Length: 194
Image (cartoon, rainbow, N blue to C red; front, side):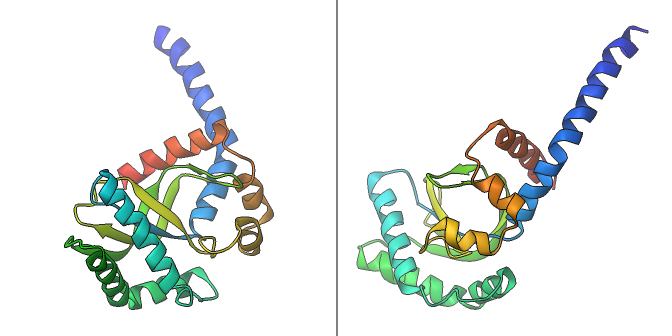
């Protein structure tokens, strides 16, 4: 009898929370299914390695501005996959020009990202497609931006609204709230289970 008195309220609370958050989770997952990120990981958190990462970021963006011109997510992912050798070459070229002998790895992956807050928008936690460039050990702080829609080089509100629904734009423009933490916890658990 005691277990029922405890179990029933806990169970009902969980059902209520899931019912309330399910539309939010669905909207967040829709966003992660429409976005392609560029993710650069530094070798370490030393000042040198962090500056190298930021320099590589600038070099990659300057030299690939005409590369990711696909009309949709799939086209841009295909372009990235077909350009991995060129992206590797550009990365090595930059690192060597800075006197670095770090190795670099370029790959297209699906990976978990935590909620990210910017001045103009908030991107919810989730598993996103990304072009990942790892410098050396890749144990330092990372840098990322959005390749598609092309937010790295243009304003978010102009380009993202062309690809996201009104509900999705409302979510990314709402600023960080408690609902983002709920999505982040859900997506983190889901990511670890899969």
